[in-house]
Amino acid sequence: MRHLWSFLAGLVVAPVTWVLVTLGQDGSSGTIGRWVEIGKFNTANLIEPAVYLAAGGILLGLLGTLRVSPAGPLLAGLLLVVPYIGMFVAPYEVRDRIPDGWKVFGDPLPLQVPVENGTLFLIGTMLIMATFSLQRWRRWSAPASAPAPAEPEKTAESDVTLTDWPPVASPERDTAAPITLAYPDSTPTEPLPRRTGGESPWSAPPRKPEDSPGIR
Image 1 (cartoon, rainbow, N blue to C red):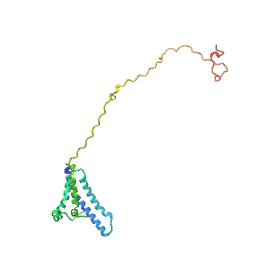
Image 2: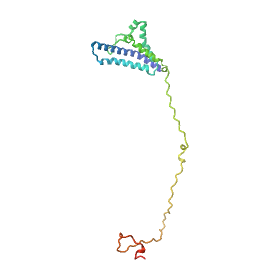
Image 3: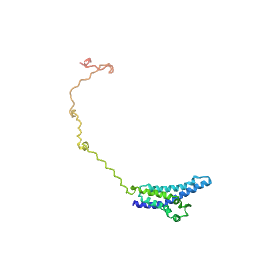
Image 4: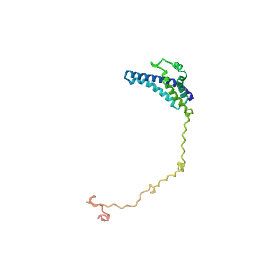
């Protein structure tokens, strides 16, 4: 299928390139010729033919350099070479068969110019040479799929499950005596020392029981 699309592309690019090259060459030569006659130049007058030549070069570059089927470049090259080769056999008949008097956007279209100066023969030969690449005749190979990543080796640690962990040690229980409802211990405690009259509680520390005169 790709050969068919390339063949159709070459069938279209060849005549379009012929027209673009003709417009560019005729416009460039006519513009520069007028500059020489009047002794002045205006660069803006050269933009239009330059655009025609650039468009033709882009079409030829896409057809001749991209990785497409070589059927298109081969057909376009032969179509562009044949008129110049015909000049070797019957130049007058070939020249008379080329259309004359056509116009594009009001500009004259002398299709004989690129044939007579050999431009079409040069371009056609370049396109034919592009077909000698053997890789262009082969079908594109499918991109190799990326290898699957290797699985990491399982270790003993990775086999541990949640149920294999040791049980959590229970906190130590309080060893204090349990709380009961029994009466408190009735063992009497030692009475606190008393202070004698006239002494301020802030003047001296409390006395011991044996030092107090009232307690014996």
